[in-house]
Length: 294
Image 1 (cartoon, helix red, strand yellow):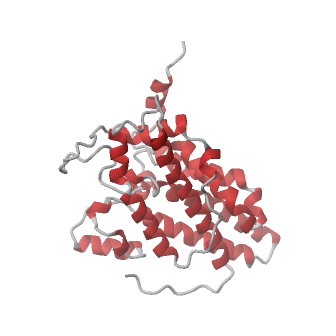
Image 2 (tube, one colour):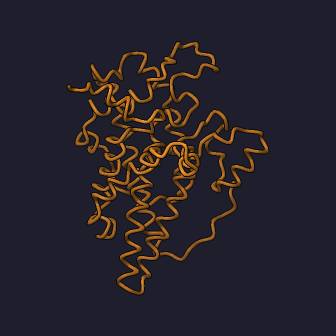
Image 3 (cartoon, one colour):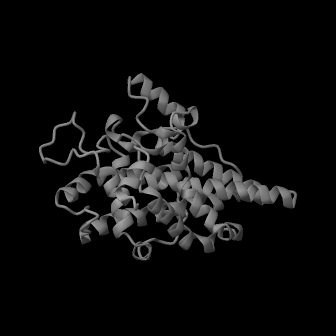
């Protein structure tokens, strides 16, 4: 007996679906590699398939469900911006942010995707630095393996942060506790329909690739991350308005919805490539003491 695809999705996709599903996350890492490879060490391009594969790795961890590991990492996939305020005001240190959150009596499950990005960026700089300074072929091989793994995982969080529903309290439909004068959907199914079903049906990597830009060095990595997240947050209401207009129906894909999602995926690929390239350049420089967190 053939089992309908919809039933298989219900059985095998976790309830807490992360941004973009597998296709979208792998696509982001693939597109970033397409534009960044000429500016990265050759071992990165040689490990292209591993880097793409690891774009989905943090969602594979979710299969462990109620384990200490998964409970800890679940909150690294999102940031409920409305519970904090302007993203531009968050400090670069996770624990300083937590201290400020406690002082505000805020929700500790607010989400930490900004820190998942900046911390994995730091790990990548470190792995590249040890590759450059390796004293033996064995050490260099181990350092390259570390860089390959971290670069792929970093891509996951950059991808999460490009999906508007991961930067808001309106993550599974417009929040029931918030006024809704525009009558935006409260359907909890919008999250997986938008990032997985629609992407699987209507989004083509070749189309997205056209607007992924070659990486340039980021002048200030933390500021660039905050600007990236802020842009994603600005797209929350437009996303819901497009959904109300019927733009994200995977059974009947439409141009505006397809273009909207394609632009988000391209922006993620561009940002990831820039982070990889900036990490590579920074690894050639002496470690710097960062300025005090704002």
